[in-house]
Image 1 (cartoon, rainbow, N blue to C red):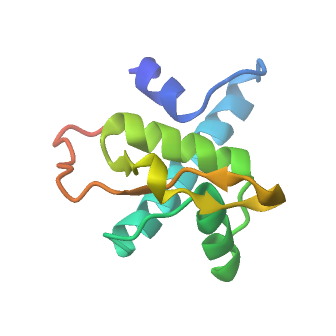
Image 2 (image 1 turned 30 degrees about the horizontal axis):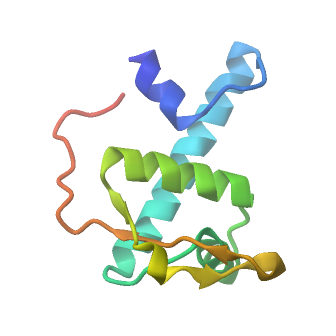
Length: 114
């Protein structure tokens, strides 16, 4: 069970157990927010920076690294699909970024992660 929780928050800095519990809770919430944006705008593709801008519009602050982590984890779970290389978007610093979209064929498991 802890293995699944560990996928949500990558404990790269050894945190005391009580701080780790808080960090895991935040990561779960952040992932849910990112997923909800993709779900709400099904069919649209977004880069991590697009998600960051949308969150700013909603008054939600999240580090770009946390957004990227959430997108990576959601892609591994099958909730998101990484778009073709040709669907890249202009990001910060003049670099292009890959995009993702909601996997409308995704079926959420019946078993809770808790």
